[in-house]
Length: 476
Image (cartoon, rainbow, N blue to C red):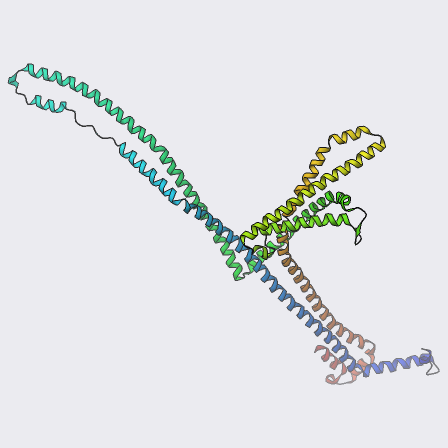
């Protein structure tokens, strides 16, 4: 620095001389410097815009892939729902058609009995009594034959009339009672027919309601196959709901597995040794964790064998006979492991009571020892029950796990799309920032040269001034 100021005997003149030389050099290199700054700024701008465009293309491809995954998952779910509805309709129709012959026979027999009883219950008009003919014969008797004979005949007719009236009333009451009995016997048949027809009506209504449900599911399935935006939005929102719900259930399952681990970790230490280590972890803890993992695995295989979940297509594709055998095998293994856990829970309670009894004896508290042993069976039964039930409860983890796995793809895709959009926007903003920073650097470069630029612009023609050239370059 001192050397630069010593080019003349006067340091101030040396400094002024260096300033003039520097300004002159910057002024004469002004166009080249402006081009270099603009080139660097444009290079950064184009590079960042190109990177932003590449990120946007990646985001579009990921969005299409996520859309395809959503549509495929929704199509598969709708196919399972429609298949289940068709199976229910098939079962209902097969059951009704299997009973159709018996139903038709029962209705025919009931109708035949009703017709027979109705035919027998018809009120048949009685035949005209015989005294009508007798009166006609008396009316034809000649009056000259005498009144005595007519009186005797009329007396006999009166007696016959009374007797016939009594017999007719008796027969009428008997036939009326018989008809009423037949009509009363027809009521159970009518009720039976009504109940049968009501059951048929209920089956038909059930089929109609299920057909409406199938129509709705088929409409949604067609929308999914056509790939409509509304179906995609519905599937996306449903996937998010399924993700958070299944995650919540899995957290509950993790809590249950933790409780299960605490039940068997301590007695496992007595079985495998509490001081041995494997990779820095206690062997007892690893053994208890392995037992829990095996139980969860058996639960997954059991659910797959029952075709409740479809995480392993190989198990679902097994023949029915092999699949049923796998059900029994996995259930047997799970039952044995649950029994082992119940035994370990009992052993844990025994160890705990032994420690409590030892501590009480060391303190000399015999009353506490007796009180503890009096209610020992309650805690023992509770822990054994928990140790036996928790493995079977962890079996149902397969259902939320399947939902979590299927919805996780969609959620990760949505998160990745959001991140890529933010990166693309950031790159675009950074590119524009570099472009305007280049313009700012050009003006900042001209700031120390304001005197020569002002002189040049004042003395030179308007079209050939360096300032105009610079402004045209910046505008371009």
